[in-house]
Length: 146
Image 1 (tube, rainbow, N blue to C red):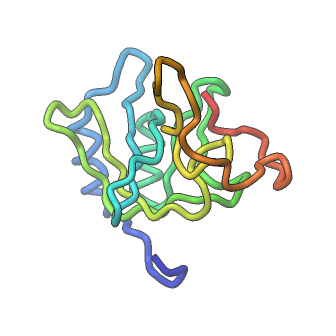
Image 2 (image 1 turned 180 degrees about the horizontal axis):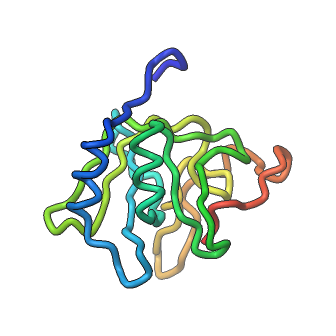
Image 3 (image 1 turned 120 degrees about the vertical axis):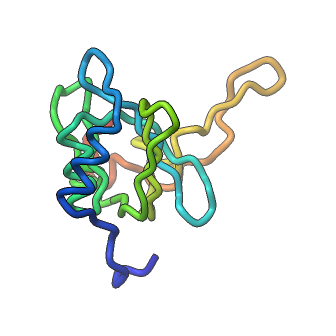
């Protein structure tokens, strides 16, 4: 997606309909899977509360809930690696979100393109994707690491 492309945003009635369809857990959270819209690559899994869902839908920028900080976390505010909303989907049970995004930069706080960079190979857990960006050099403070 070019920087000139407009993010997807939703009207208040659409946001209300989405919130009504969601089944939040006992902590008021729902899992949200971020997926690159054009390749299908799974980028990360995070949590959203009602406000994060509404903020994401209203602004077109992915916003999550940080369980470790107990605070909202707008993806990319610290690192510049934003997720622009393309479409928000709700699963059949209403208990998981699929957030189709255009990822700018890397999705993982480790500096890798996605958070699913480890696999069991030959009986051991190994990294199967390289670090793309040294997050320490850009001042990333590990926001989003839950």
